[in-house]
Length: 65
Length: 163
Image (cartoon, rainbow over all chains, first blue to last red; front, top):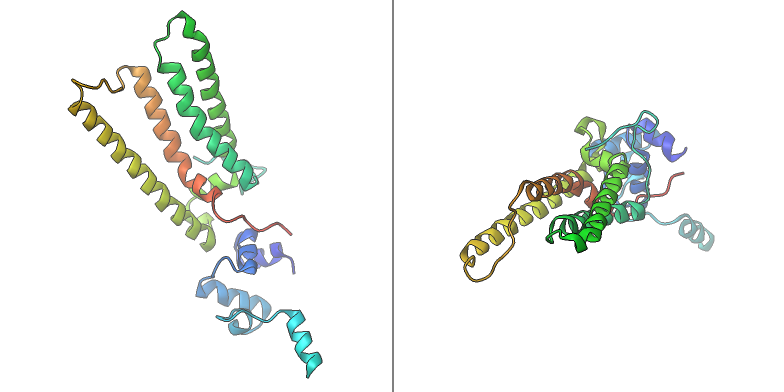
């Protein structure tokens, strides 16, 4: 899904999606819930107070286990 | 003031660097141009300075015209309903800063006029005397009031790149 598609689904400016991706803007509860709804996932899977581990870290951890 | 075009309802995309340069040009060229054009007594040998001043004012208005259709000016001037929550948050921050700067300028101008009255007999400080002076100050205040929030937006963090 492109940034523009997600922005259209959320009714926001595509730049806002970019700010969210970059972690430069913390969304309101309403926008966070809308984003989670678009992805069909619980909101805590999309947003967290702690930074998510990168894909490389997750794959690395699986390899070690 | 935001000039919306049908082709670009979200405002003309403009890099922050270009917008910052145009705002800086606007805020430097207009007052300098006015000083050169109206400041010195325009005797014959100062005609050139007057023409240069007029050209600087014209260049500043050109910068203003380009900025009037920019996405920064759109974000600063659009009704709330046409902006999303991130744009509104940025706009509110920029408007607060612009208000603080404008209030500071007004306070300094009042202080200057007060000091001028106090020291009128010892130091001849400048004050607007004729209609041309007041005209220059009026349009300067209008330009500053209309563009300062957008200028603060241009100095926000770089927007993310498009897809």
